[in-house]
Image (cartoon, rainbow, N blue to C red):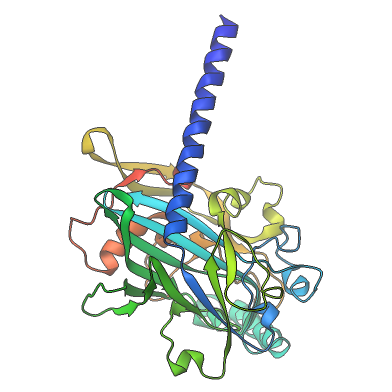
Length: 362
């Protein structure tokens, strides 16, 4: 009898793994289809503007990335982190862009001034309820900002799906756009190249917005253009043309290490936040919508960083809009459908019920 139960448990476990593997592959196909083209402007130190992965230096420590970004032994190969959610009507793809440094204010002066501002923010504490003083830090170790691409499902599946909305994170503010030829009163448009939104990343501070090609964005600047190719190329080795980037699942990298019990957790994260219970709507059998309650508890909410502003860079579940302080921390990542529906004033034909439970809720 024991052997029977052991065999049954093994088969069930294998089926779960197979199902998760298939869904992960489906997620990647979706992320590949809508992978943006990133126009990265370069500042005074191009290596600090190259897009790469958090562990570019071979470890998951957050407090040595500033120094190691200058070390030519470490290649700054191009990676973009991603996560996919899916409702009955739309796909939602978060793309997170990492830089080892945010060096607003310069490589030397920026960190020094940021240290002063950080200490002032700590002294003021509750006397600065807006949090604007803390956000004004000029430079800090690690930088992660992002893009959310929302694609309307096609009648015959992914091949006919197309992007319709895009939101970007620009220094703790979410900026909303309609995609391609789609028009909606009150919103600017983001250009597309096929299904790829054209995205601009500013030099030094790395705020993200739609790429317009206007003089305000391009005058006096050099650029590296990153396109998805499935290969993580080194911009210092690419002599002409665009630089290819590879995609990495957030579910396999940044997220598991946010669990306080993970061996890399305290090396990677400098702050933790208790998210309590997160509630999303899922599509159940028979087409009913039901609430799914997920107890997350404490998770790493800011990367460990000691240069300039302390622990200033955040993972996607730590992102927020300073103009919507009443929103739950991380709601833009945990429940993109509900946020997009609100932000664009969409009707009930836009589904907020997830047909595949997001990885963090499994």
